[in-house]
Image (cartoon, rainbow, N blue to C red):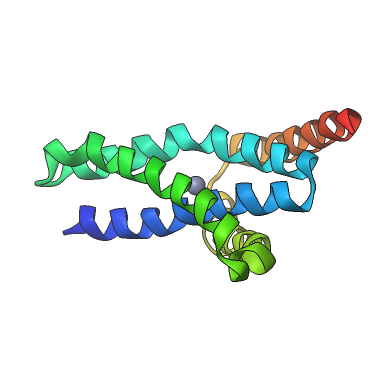
Length: 141
Ligand SMILES: [Zn+2]
């Protein structure tokens, strides 16, 4: 049951991963490339997360299928964005809002609860990677 609810939540999330990629490309190809790179980088941990949740529960054999479904949901988000006017106009804003909400409500409080310097250093390294990628992508245009 926990696996099923996690799968439903992650399917919704990965659908909007796809919406973010497609709508960012519609705004500007350089932005689309940057969003694609960011989403591509977190696909592996996303797949490991859902597979682990499924394999830890009674739904052991469904781990691989659940990870594949997340990939399909991302592709569905990309394809639907091209055909649904609401997603074309508001998809990037909704995706950005959801990402900021998750970061502010879950990730940053989690990192503040840890002692030591490794988590803050990883957070700032992520910000530096973002600015490095942005600089590289801006150089392409
Ligand atoms: Zn994602």
